[in-house]
Amino acid sequence: MSDARGPVALARDAVTRGERTAESITREALAAINRQEPSLGAFTAVATEQALAQAVAVDQARARGAALGPLAGVPVAVKDNISTRGLPTTAGSKVLAGYVPPYDATVITKLAAAGAIIIGKTNCDEFAMGSSTENSAYGVTANPWALDRAPGGSSGGSAATVAARAVPASLGSDTGGSIRQPAAFCGIVGLKPTYGRVSRFGLLAFASSLDQIGPLAITVDDAAAVLSVIAGPDGHDATSGAEAVPDWTGITTATADARGLRIGVPRAFIEGVDPAVAQAFEAALATWTRLGATVVDIALPNAGLAIPVYYLIATAEASSNLARYDGARYGYRTTLTPKDSLREMYERTRDEGFGAEVKRRIMLGTYVLSAGYYDAYYLKAQQVRAKVRDDYAAAFATVDVVATPTTPTAAFKLGEKTADPLQMYLADIFTVSANLAGVPAMSLPCGFSPEGLPIGCQLTARMWDEATLIRAGTALQQATDWHIRTPSGVTP
Image (cartoon, rainbow, N blue to C red; front, side, top):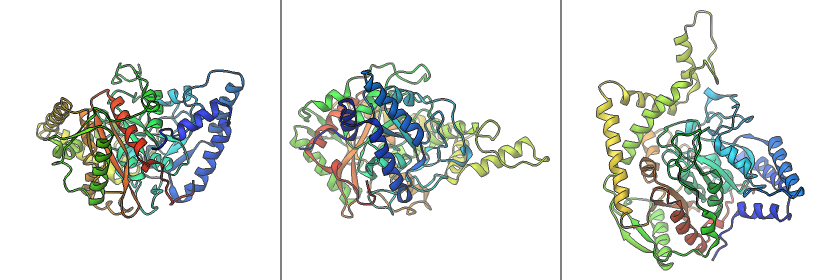
């Protein structure tokens, strides 16, 4: 039986009890980042001075006897597509090189109010478009379990630095699996909340009806603690929900078990995964069964259509959202001559500023929205999306959670899929459905491949029912030790 508490809880408790200072914890994290960065490449910017100033402020508040926040002294890394005042926010793109936002995203404001230390910005696929963090204009991030392997994407930097134990937790964004897939590849917990549970204000938009910010951490307990801070309604985001934020950490501090839990498994959908992934997934199901859960077979009839539906809807929204990057207002602008027209400036700025994958998705999205194709592609995709949502509603009429592997394989090698975008897209086959349906989903470690690479299991629940995910995930973690194993690829 393993301890449910992780580095977030341990750091917070040490600071609030006066056993350690926030400054010492922050300096330790900064030193680990500096050691790891030459080989890991997880960060696009490290906020050394700002982080230390925040840590000193926490220590001063404690010395005055002031009440400390629930993340007091906890270093948190932030994906580089989340706006941070005074820190570069590039979304991994040349088109935003040098851009420093004048405002914080709502999640950053909430983290600061909770006493968290913003340690830096993490590398990501350009505008969150990718499954390997190889599409960034600022270099490739490696997987700490094997430096020749991808950390997953698009939140690969956020996952890699947590897995390497440099920081206790990080924020990522998830449009089609970009929190859960890298969490699986790096052997940590990644939680995508219900759409609207966390404000998107300050998140650089990829696909607005799919994007959601969420935490990555070592334990379910730590992920719940971060989610409890960043969740809640926000007047700056009209899509944020008004639902109250429960005490999710209370679930993990109680004795967790799976008694009465009904777990649905769409076996027809998950056929054909790598044998090591299948074995680890079945072992996780067996553990839940031993803890009192009931595993039942279910059907998700339209799950096989999720990938094409996702890449029609997401690219259509991306083509609209990325139109704002024109070289006229902020970010990169091409070198101009007196003879250049405004149109030429737009065209060359976008051609030089965007990478190949972003261009591919903009062109695909523009095509499916164009006259003559809108009804055949985009409208049809939205109709199938509704059926995917209905499939989950039918499943949750009989089960509490749906379980699948997070990914079909363990982490693939860097460069292995970059020449074949379709193969790269299929890495998200088990994750995109949750975004299409707007339901919460979580990946947590459930084993290792013969090569020593982490394998993840995914749980999906009803809208607004993150509590059941946290309960089921805590039960598995307290009965296993997959999450406490550490990678040997980097020095902590």
